[in-house]
Image 1 (tube, rainbow, N blue to C red):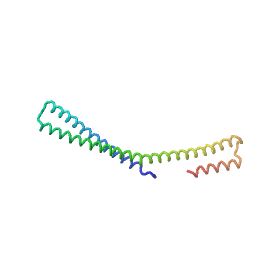
Image 2: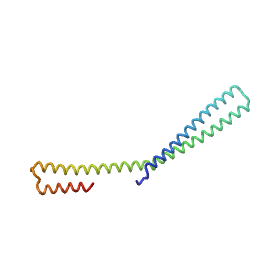
Image 3: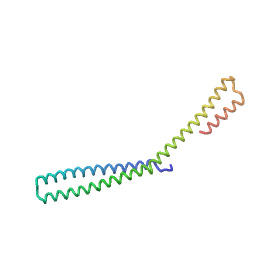
Image 4: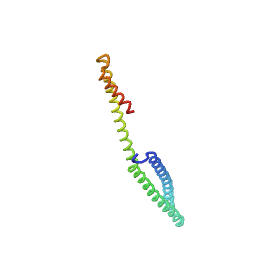
Amino acid sequence: MIAGSHSSTLDRLYAWERKLYDEVKASESIRKDYDRKCHQLRHQFAKDQGTQVIDKTRAVVKDLHSRITVAIYSVDSISKRIEKMRDEELYPQLLELTEGLVRMWKAMLECHHAQYITISLAYHSRNTTGTMQGDVRREIMARLLEEIELF
């Protein structure tokens, strides 16, 4: 194949998609922690707890926010890598595969058409004269031998 190994491309795509899945799951966990800490911070403000407690929670919220930003960047980066592989590797391979299938089926059609003509000639020749005449018989035998030699 000109476009490379279809199997290895699919294996690499699977690995990247698995990595993307893991990143999304991890970022979802971080987001849940972030939401919980934001709720906790709002609750601390409402109860007017000490500044030290509020500052500690605020620092945790900022850290979680930074981790969410990094996770979003990571997910975006992996997604772009997957899209690039899809467009630059997988698409040409699938195109090459389908073009090969089209060529194969055209060749099959030509072979079946030639076989059909040969069989039709043999059938009609036998039905018209009762016995095959020399020239017609040689022509049919030559076509059959050509077909056999192709395979």
